[in-house]
Amino acid sequence: MKTIGLIGGMSWESTTLYYQIINREVARRRGGLSSARMNLVSLDFQDIAQRQRVGDWDGMAGILCDAARRLSDTGAECLLIGTNTMHQLAPQVQAATEVPLIHIADVTADAILAQGLDTVGLMGTRFTMERTFYVERLAQRGIRCVLPDEVQRQEIHRIIFEELCRGELHEVSRQWFTDCIADLQSRGAQGVVLGCTELPLIIRPADSPIPTFDTTALHALAAVEFSLAN
Image (cartoon, rainbow, N blue to C red):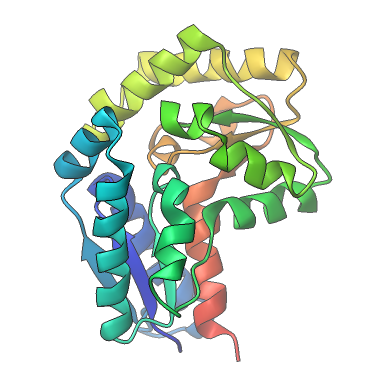
């Protein structure tokens, strides 16, 4: 079993999902009391969120690259950045170490294409929806993204930071997401990417009229696949 290196804490609510999904899948595949070999560097999300607000991407790159090197030094054999937004910095993080980085958008694209889809809605933080790094990564695989409108993007971002990252799950927000997904479907989306690792906390498959792509689970399971591969 290879050792997984996870850069987490962004937020710790979704890092908990990573830990659960990875260990449960390893136990399911290997049986008994098996659990994953995993090293974790958990960052202070308050610091990261403040830097996001002021656009200090160079500062964040330094923090993530340092975390990647620390994981490499402790024996990690693959790297995960446990957040969609911070994959804006994936090229810098990969350049900081020889340990292979499993990109969350790549495993998401694999899942989309496996279902025969080519057009998906994308929900996440404003950074993920409005910067080009995620949309272009999917476009390289022939997948087109339908984005929520400006008002919807503001509300998705607010719910993520003011509710989900604080562990608050409100039924009114769940229903709002259902309505938003229905709107994306009406605009051509065949499925919807839950492009924030906190979104699976509140959006269940039954809440969506179209297939959902849980980026947290897809990313975590890809790490298990790497870890257990011969």
